[in-house]
Length: 94
Image 1 (cartoon, helix red, strand yellow):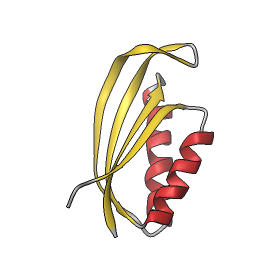
Image 2: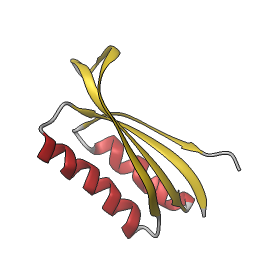
Image 3: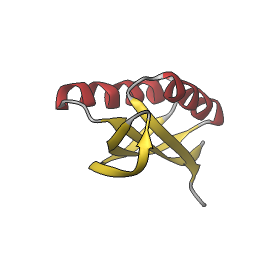
Image 4: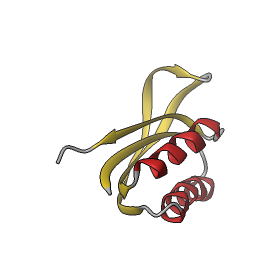
């Protein structure tokens, strides 16, 4: 198992819809034998440039411990989820 940081930039949503998106990814990680160590909500930030005609997004940072196959599934789902503007997955140094 390796440690990763996952940053999601989510469309500006109402609190309930935002919580559903975060819960969706948290559940995805746990169903694929990973653990969520910590979730940091950085809040709404203005983007440097528009992404999909959107000028601001909500940043959420996940600290996870998972297998590479879990990370691959997380990447796949983030690409096809409409609420996600951008995402980045980085393996933490040991």
